[in-house]
Length: 282
Length: 300
Image (cartoon, rainbow over all chains, first blue to last red; front, side):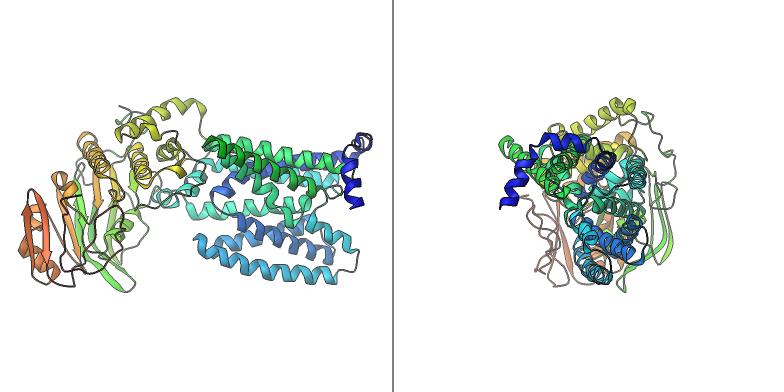
């Protein structure tokens, strides 16, 4: 309880925050989380439109498995996370096109993947703090290399979404008619699954596997509550995701708690506010 | 008129040849032969109704035209190309299925996907005005102008159906494939959709393939009927197909065809005939076999 009050008290400690903001590693972290806000804001509306929240959750859990395996075998952690979640997302994409069928197969794969992750973490001889941060997130460890990786992934995701925009919206909204008109619906599903895997893997390294949904789903769901224009939804989602991501990081600096605490809180508050606005409007 | 040829997107030349050509097509599904040796050529501007009891293969025939179901044998050409080609000017109105309530699309967004939803990229902002005109025109034709800015997820089934038909005509199709497009529409809605399709084929030579279990709402505009029963089929004008002899032969049991006040009623007394309740509340998969195969509830 005392610790909680201390945390709340230190949010207002602008001196510490200002000091930290002069540090390179903090600035790298801020840049990384801003990029993450951008990429999750861009892809979120499509995830929500395709009702793929559970796939995202599954992909992020398997990013954890990949990262834990990388940790154990002494490989690049980010690469392990990307591999884990992209393979998972591809499997989900292959398993079933019908949402109902996808639902249980994702659960099955996710459960097994988590079991493996526990095994890898158990076998890892190093500090358990590192593996714990994969669950709850830790941005402060972002290096220059990590920042470059984040920028590359953000560019890939945003670029792919721009190129795919119309066929992606078509096949998300009405796959039957899109296919009839000659949109390569199945190929688009697979490409989108890979994009989701990439996004989840990036988000895992910042907010942790347990809280990926707060950046990939919550802002998009909040936007969908207040607008039904597809472009406006994307704009609002990016805005909400940036506020949650960057705002959450700034607030977490002085108290020194994991960044995910404030990211999830802010995005949840935005969501509630949007639902409130929607309720008043009707 | 925005939907006139030459208004921006070229479509397959509607020359004198058939828009849809099926030759010796045999289709089976789940080990059952639904369609045997079907030859059918549909001319530009022709209105063809596909009829038959549940499970006779009406929807499967559409899937063959869409390239989603491969026939066992025979050749299929739609607009001179293999079915399912990207960029075929084909309007498709699928069997009614509701959109997700939270979907971030308005009526106009769905219709504009019909115009350029198959193209890559986000689209040039400079083309927006032209697109908007086509979208507004298509929605107005369906008396659905008010649905342009309404969220799809908050529309009723009938409203969604109007928007779907608007989307199908927005692509300036040379053939429209409609799967039970009148389901969930009230009487006014049925008339609007039927007259839009009729106008489309008269003014723009668009062929219409119309799957239905209820001939009467479209009887005045139907040129030919494809009637499927149990792997048998009969093609002809309504007068040729809806006779006591032909229907009895198709159903292999005595069936009587009556004409009541310009409507066609088919009456049989066998379980073989599956009555299909025609009302907006029922989906046509309700297939309780009843005594009479009623093709026309005049009251609806």
